[in-house]
Amino acid sequence: MDNLSLQTLNEFPLIQPGDNLSSIILESCKHNHFELQDGDIIAIAQKVVSKSEGRYENLLEIKPSQKAFDLGKSLNREPAFIELILNESNEIISTEKNVIIVEHKLGFININAGIDRSNIPENKNIVLLLPEDPSLSSQKIYEDISSKTNKNISVIITDSMTRPYRSGVTNFALASANIQSLIDLKGEKDIYGNILQATEIAIADELAAAAGLLMGQGSEGMPIVIIRGFDRTQYAKNDAFDLIVKKEDDLYR
Image (cartoon, rainbow, N blue to C red; front, side, top):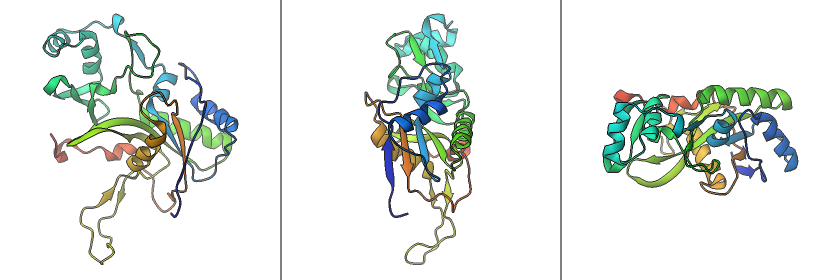
C-alpha cells in the first residue's frame, strides 16, 4: 500500500426516514463524477444510517421510570432523555461530573448511549438513536451497492467517541461489512526480528478516523467518504464488533 486517497461526496442530500441510502450514495457518486472501483471502502456516518432507518424519538412521548426521575434530578437532566439512555444500555458505568457513561446494549462503552441532538431537524424534543443493528445495516448497504455496481467494495459505518485519558473525539468503526476490522500480528516479526507478543491493529477504526478528517463533526455535511488504495485482499473478513473488548479484559472499568 503506497497511496491512500479519500474522496468526499459533495452536496450529499439530507436523508429522510425510509430513504434507500445505497441508491442515494450511488446517485451522489454520479453527481460527483466518481466511479466506484473494486477495493473501495465506503465510510458512512452513523447519523445518515439512523435517519434512513427512522431512529428518531420524541422526548414528549417517553414515559420516564422512577429510576430516570431519580437520575435526572441528581444530574439535572431531562428524565425522558435519561429513560432513553437506560433503554439503550446494558448498564450505567459512571455518572461522574454529570457525564453518563454506559455500556450500550450493542456492547461498547459510550456517552449517553450514543443518543444525539446534533445535525438533526431543529426541535429540542427530537433525538436520534444509533441504528438498531449496525452490523445488519452495513451488510445490507454492502450487498445492495455490490449487486448494483458489480464491484467488490467494503462498508464501514462510523461514529465519534471519546477516549480514556485523551481530550476530544475521534471517529471509530461502529460496524463494517466485507473488511477485516482487526488484524492480529502476534507471532510476526518487527524490523529487528523481534517476535510481536501482543500487537493487534484496529484497521477499521483507523480507516474510520481517517474518513472523519473529511466528514467533520459540525456543519460540513460530508457523511460519505470513499477510501481508495487500502489493500484488504490479504486479510480475512470480520465485523467491527470484534473490536469491542470483553468486560473481563477491559482495563478501564
